[in-house]
Image: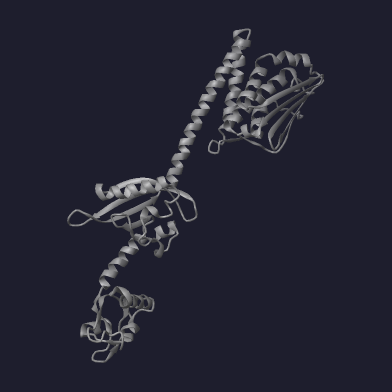
Length: 424
């Protein structure tokens, strides 16, 4: 093609390939008119670049045939300078690459159908192809990822450690063969996930890697399940240790204050049963590791509820973690046991009111007993025993809180204050 006159010299094969009429005088624009509208600008830019700088022309484009169907053509050429006139022309060859494009299209459809990131790179990690799933995960269009380095994609870019791990995995494949590893990633929305990366080299006939195939499968759900299982195991171990610790204290204090073997057995049996009930409440929602205060009160006070009603609970529900819930259930059991022996639950004329206040800095729990038969001296005698001791230890040790008691004829008021940072 002569750049000055726009004359196009084409042999019969080229005319047939470009669907141009035989025997007629041709212009460059005749050829451009046969090119697919989406490819024309790209071809013109390639021609201009060859004429104005590089001197080499290389392009692939679609040509409309006689039946208005398009086929792919590859063009390779070079700009030639006439030594006499200095005129420029473009000489080259064109050939049909329809079969190649059909195979590429099939491969593209196959890799786009994979529900995982799939990329083809050079041995040094430069991206040649990235499927639609990969584009969606990275949030990058083709012009952004084409020729980028795989481990420098933003999906790995939150952590230098992660980028290094992915880079080392890719480089190992070039020398060791197929390799597999796990790495965290962040999608274009900033959500963290986990990928199982498999890197497979494609070797030449001489055994040298020509390309690398990288497949990244999202294993975020599996990793989340593994982490959840680990947390559950840790939680169970923690609870078992707490149960042994509390049980040991129960037995030790029962032995210290019991006067007979039967007293020791009965006290231990009752409190172990309370511990069992407390543990049941604490494990009711093991997945979220929370327990309801109202459930604790309902379960622990159920044996002493009567008709007409004499136990009144007021307050919106409140959640504790499992460890605090176990402590609270034991505290309520001990307070109720004392109320049965010396306080409001000793006879039918007593009244027990329970309420709480969820303040900004502290959780405040109030236990108030009213009964004409309450005598402070009786309660003070009990306060030196097992029940009072274990309540004090649970409040100060397990809950890092404070407890206060006020007793007067006909009334007992107990307040427990627990800082918010130790509540959960």
